[in-house]
Length: 570
Image (cartoon, rainbow, N blue to C red; front, side, top):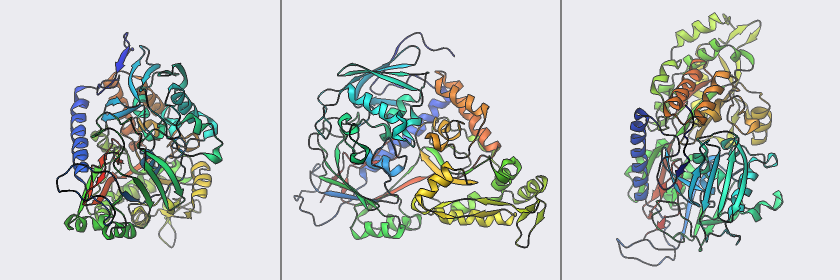
């Protein structure tokens, strides 16, 4: 479909330039309703540490200022720069430090933030942003068009070594400062996911003065409600109230400075320890409530529990189809058919996490339930038949398949620092079930350095497990486009090289026709399941809990908790 002959202006809660069909809009309405319910539920979530020196207040009174909220998370911070790191922990923390140009208000709608309005050219290649005035960075630098240019240029600069952010704006060409409060961004080609990309914390606007400093002296400096204080590696990050905060996004519950004095993110990898920190009052909130403790927590007085299904890529097992036995699609499909995903997920997660049959979460726009028909679901007899057909007809003394004197062995590295949600336990179940059909899975334990250099970049793996939160179907391009390997800041860890998939994801990203985009995204979902490049396992669900004195916590479109409106009650 050709581009519109008219310039499209997008601001407030109007949809992005690309519209979707009736079927998609109905699905969006359901998703939007779920998001609204999640936010409302989150606002009702409450928690706080007792014994602080906050003023006493009458029950039912409005928000009060003061106090420290400690939030414990399972992961750890690997970089302070959102343009560099790709982890969920980075997004969670940096959302409080950095404001974005725009905010995502629904599955396909956006509102003003640091940009008060914007226009898109008729050819879809130029975005002109009018910026808020009177906004200042934490270091005193005024927010102007120069900051937008510096931030976007920093993201795509090869020296930055972006692990994710650069892939979100792959067609970025240049930014031109029109004046202090107008910036023109030019893309090499039309790219409809651009607005959504600009809403995420990884593209939060940074102080140009901070970016100009040597890498060794880097500190995150944004315009957000909290400013950076300290990072104690593998322990915690501490943020402090920005008293001059004047740039909340559309839809914020209040204006001005945040209520909390300090916001502390504690890195607590052990589930039982994190849960104990909440129930003992050492932390006022935790991410990743252990599923085994969820029912108990719901019954405890003085705590609140919330769940939100995460949009984007499910927790999937990606099959490196460029090496060893997995070059053969029959072996890939056999592995998929050997895994009883429903049983494993149900038993480990107590029904809190939905078993997946699609790489895309069902809360993501253009999710296609019909694609599940191409998934090689649990059928051990079919798995054995496929292995026989592929020539793996013999077995060794341990029951593993053998061909040409070699055992059918797959390497699945275990990155202990990144383990969460009992994924190590789930992996043990996958190992055991694969063994029953004769597939051996090895799980070498590796540290972060080896995991990145030897495995993700070096390619010395057969299987990699990962999930990725992003509320847009463009995440399929991130995961399966041939140019989006990890070494190029992408998520194509299956190392897929498919001209058809490349065509579909690029067309979907460029078209203004919703039917074309939906068809392309459906085709990708079907093809990656048909070729068994991926084995979907479960949809990540944000299981968060707070004690009964924290008020006003909401969740954004990526299901990150937002603490700007949070306050501590009596």
